[in-house]
Image (cartoon, rainbow, N blue to C red; front, top):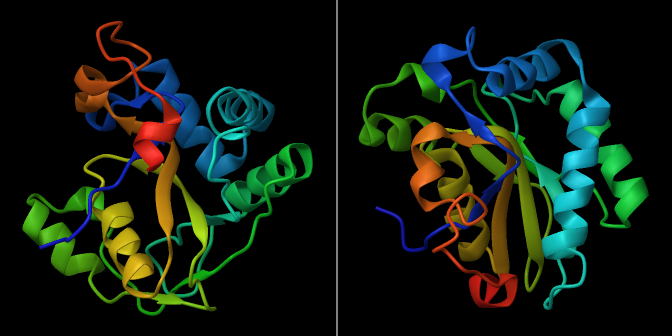
Length: 193
């Protein structure tokens, strides 16, 4: 059971079971594996940052990358993306999360409970996060379990505001997407408060 909710922002919608026929999902996979279309994703991240986050109060202290499922592993393509993003936007990239043991890839697990058990206790926080506003970057978030788990850990360790950002949100989340649904009006200040 988690004590907090997570606001996760996505650059697009990811169709896990239909990657072959969904262009955005294919691009997301190819970037993560091969580094293809980095400029495409960098431009989207920068545009999102400028539109929604860059001038919002409170400011984020830094962005960090959510680790791969293997112990001590980070995706080099995501690191390169975040380094360029950081240089362009001025939002510092700082790696404060480390996978302390290899876990199952969450997308292979069927239930939310299995996913929660899988990620529980698998991330170390590498430095003091007290009073920090942290943006966590992941490649995709299908159910949000991984990002929600680490948000709860960061808050327990004193972080102030924690939000997630990813290249692809699960396709099911389209129903609640603020940009795709004109009836969903939002203000970053309200979400982050």
